[in-house]
Image 1: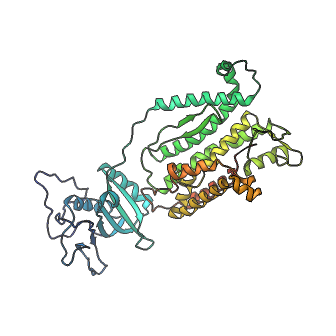
Image 2: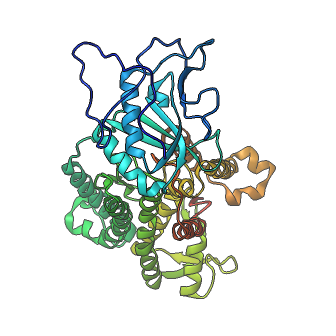
Image 3: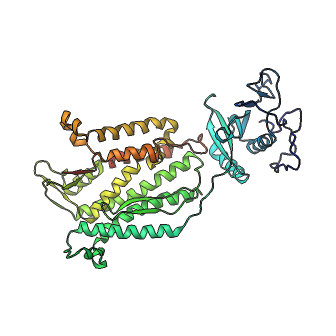
Length: 465
């Protein structure tokens, strides 16, 4: 264990009237080098040296860009912060060196290099709580220049600001989404005789879409509140769900919640990320079987302008279990005629699959990053390449050259590629603690979630003839 007191030949000199922040408990005396003018781009390092006290930086402060003599370089604020952080992590981290970068906004005010004495999952929450209270945010990273046990603790100035929330906005959006899904469900029902456009707005007509609206909103509510309650369990500030109404198509563009603060570590990131799709799946699958039980199988021939919905491995399996065969039947031309509940379940499963795309900060992106860390970038790139191939297959010149690719062509993936590249982002940012790994139970669950994605993914969701 290293002594948090800094070796130094001199006390720091502060401007007249400046006040020192209170030291952490147990830090009774501070010795630190005085502030000095730094050359542009210089990097400051304190190195505790080897166990024998040898080495060019053993127990000294040095400017790596200087030519010759060692001189004190840390500012008074940085020196005091280093002493406080050293006292805070004492017993948790064996400090082997201290650095400060030329760009504190990017690199941190103080960077501690060392080895963990306790699992970061146990010690980092306390570091985060204590430093946040003093206006700082810690970032724990593997040390790329060290071995597997070496870590870097970067202390950034500032704390993420929690924006106020307005629950009224959530309520209004949900009510509008309820109305839009009732409207779409009414159109899906197909039993109404409408004499004028005003008949579309009659409450007595809208309620005929209740099976669709209630089924779809149940799936989306389960999904979003899965995220919400997982976040609350881990004491992560989060908003209520925001629903997005759309008075055509599916009746909604889905829903989302907003995290109001950074997630501390990969375990919390994983739990919050997978809770949504798994909760939604627990509602969508039973509704799929309920809908199929009341659905009809009839001959269905494509007509110009008609729309056919694609199948995933899961929906194929559900149809086989319900009807004893895979549909659509190429020999007889028969297919399932969707009712309101089946259609809502199909949309819910599609939403699950889209959210589980292993890219960016989608639920699937959370999952693979928590599992694999930076190695998840390979999966991110592979997913974009797959979507790119399916989208490219929709181009007419490609279909003329390779007619068979029309079976896997879907132009809608172009929109998703653009959203991923320019809105969502293809890669996932690290958690504050990027050292904590998933435990075996979470890793097993993570691979199960990847399997769910494979089972629910639809290469061609919609086909228009």
